[in-house]
Length: 302
Image (cartoon, rainbow, N blue to C red; front, top):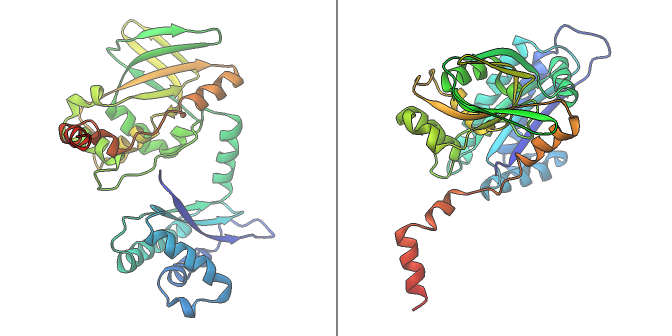
């Protein structure tokens, strides 16, 4: 499980401004140095306990991601984004210099009026991406329940890549988790998804568990499936891994997908809940049944 630490800066304006002051975002550079790099004896008393705790948890391997947040009550702006990107670079270089044995993902987020409005909308409207999606030469099957309809088929990865490039995490508006990122480690499943997509795209369909997505409407006419709106409730990691590839994936890469149309809020809530309640499988679990491990287990009983 990804354990995240957040270093945040806040700003409140008493009157409406077109954008928040960018210099407040740049203050995160100072915060990074104080929290992670300065001699702990020099850190101000009000920050010292937090700095000690953060450094210790990084050293113990408990933190795998650090995010920089700038929260304010103005619209988001390019100036702030540039300062946050610079602060992210400072964070990355500081971690490499002081915690080089730890693989820490870095990110930044500006939380202004638009972001807050989007977050609020996602609580009341589960499907925020309302694009019309068409899949040609579609083969699949429909299943119906008392208050839902579902269509199971395969989804072209290049279309998923396009959607992620356009909408990013809005694709997960009804999900309990966003994309967790990928690191170059054997234990990171998302990195493995990207490797499969790049190296063996024709095998992806049978290697991957696929995606479950809510939709406002789906219709199959001839062999063309038309889907109106999408929110991915299971498969955020697959989507993020595909969407974060440097270039559009091969046309041969197909992903199992199940589209669900449901207007009952209680059922929708349960769909989200139960599609995210599977037992976690760690990379070491895949080693437990190989021949070497079986032989060691057998020998230990002699």
